[in-house]
Amino acid sequence: MRILALDTSTEALSVALSVDGVCHSREEAGGARASQRLLPLCAELLQTAGLQFSDLDLIGMGAGPGAFTGLRTAAAAAQGLAYALGLPVARIDTLMAQAETAFPLLQAHGAGRPELARIEPGSIVLAANDARMGEMYWELFRADGTGWQRLHPPAVHSPERALLAWAEVLANLPAQRSPGTLLLACGNAWSVHAENLTTACARLSADNPRLRALHRAVLHAIACTPSAAAVARLARQQHAAGLTVAAALAQPIYVRDKVALTTAERELARA
Image (tube, rainbow, N blue to C red; front, side, top):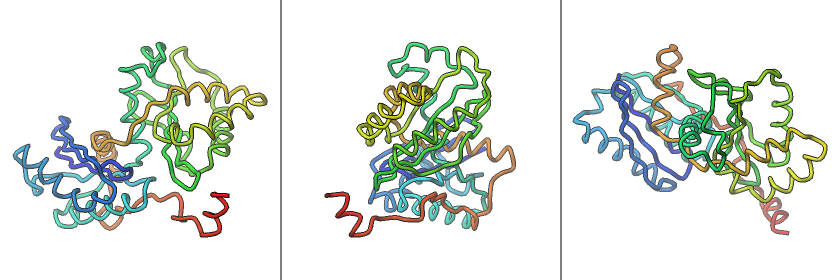
């Protein structure tokens, strides 16, 4: 199967071509340039592999949550290609793609935690990215050995509210956990909101011991963005499960409707 995958949900522009499970990818700065560079970069990747757009079987797109403009850029490209080529689209949760990107990095590098050498299925990954306006997009997953089990759907909260939500989700998980089950964190929210998270953890952990484990995971979070290679792997799984959609249904996952602060809110934030 030949899959073209793309993600522009963050400041990075990432594209990947997976041919029968062998993946080649490219990444460069995105942002305002993403809409101009996305399709040319895809064409360059295909040309390097000796393929054309007409040789593709599936389009994988990072659907969100993420930067609104970036999500629309990816959706427009995926829809256009799918319409033109008569192909299905795999709408991939970008936070799941981020967890998929981070997991091997955590295993390979340890992120300062020697016990990561024994990561096992059942380990929990908290993926979170900055959502601006003092908030963060987040989602909680469990690695089940073959993919990702979603423990909480994508959400957008302030750091303090997010901490309380994470603790509540973890408190309701089954008690049985193997020695290799770990709590891991990935994304850019941990650095962007480091001060607020640290302050909130210190204040809340006295009354909630589970937040201490969360704090440790946050301190060793690995910074990464969703890679198109991860989108391609998840797209392949989605296709095998019969969960792809037609071009018209390849819509972004926004999570938050509000895209900017009002003038009054900006002035209050500066005060």
